[in-house]
Each structure stands twice: as C-alpha cells, then as structure tokens.
Amino acid sequence: MVSGLACKPDVKETGTALKYFDIKGYFTADTATLNKLGKFVIKTVTHNGVTDTKKVKIDNWGQELDMFAGADINRPAWKNSYTIATGDNLVLYKAKEDDLKVREIIIKKDGEKVKWIVIYTRTKNILYQTTEKLSYFPDSLYLIEKDQRVRLMGRNRYKIQGVIER
Image (cartoon, rainbow, N blue to C red):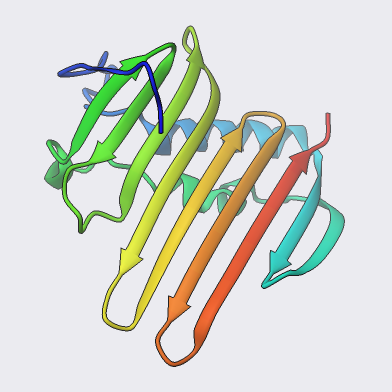
C-alpha cells in the first residue's frame, strides 16, 4: 500500500519513552485545540447508502474523535507487536499478529508536523466482523468508514465525514 518505505528498527522516542507515535497524546492535544476554536463542521453521515448532511458545532471533540485516540498502540503488552517502516515523510506501523485490532497506522509528516493519519482496524469473532478505516487531516477533515458483518443480521456500512470549516 505504501511504497518507498524502508524498515527501521525503531523511531525517535518521545520524552515519555513511547516506542510508537503517540496517537492518544496527539488526539488529546488536537481535540483540546479544536474545542477552544469552536469551529463548525459540515457533517455527512451515510448508513447503508442513506445520507444526511448537517452543519453542526461539535461541543466535545474528544468524544467525536475518540475512535482515533482509541487506536493507541503504545500499550506495554504490544511493545513488540508492530513493525515500523519509514520513508518519504511517512511512518507505517503494521500489526505482526492477526488478533490485534489496530492493523495499520500510516502517518504523513512534514518535518514534525502531522499532515494526515490513516488507521485501519479489524475486529473478528464467530458472531461478527468489523473493519474500520479512520482518516484524519488536521484542521480540515476527518473520515470514519466502517463495514460491519453480523451473522444472521447481515451487513451494515457506515461513513461519517466531517469537513471542518476554516
């Protein structure tokens, strides 16, 4: 999916000695900034092909982007559970084990500034399978795409797009 990447044993660690990019810390800081700015969002929600678009003010950005912060892979038990590849201002974290929910995280940076983040997750058991693609472009757009297949109930597709007004 991402070309031009070279494997690296480690990335520059932060002051808190995290092995991987601090997704949780990044979204905590970014949502605090968005809460202060109080911007409006053109929010489009699509469920199984039925679409609704509204202009809304998000009062709690932490809650709105909770799925992104929840993709934190800096848990002690997962210290060696992801491969790290870098190249062309990209960092790719890829799960080594099939049972990890967070499958991939791709981060595009310009220097130290995050340009975008894409997160792929998957939950699978005997009753259902859920896949998610979470895309975030700071100060402009977030996109949540979810495909859920539940035994005996069928398939549900969700798409939430938020365009942050400038």
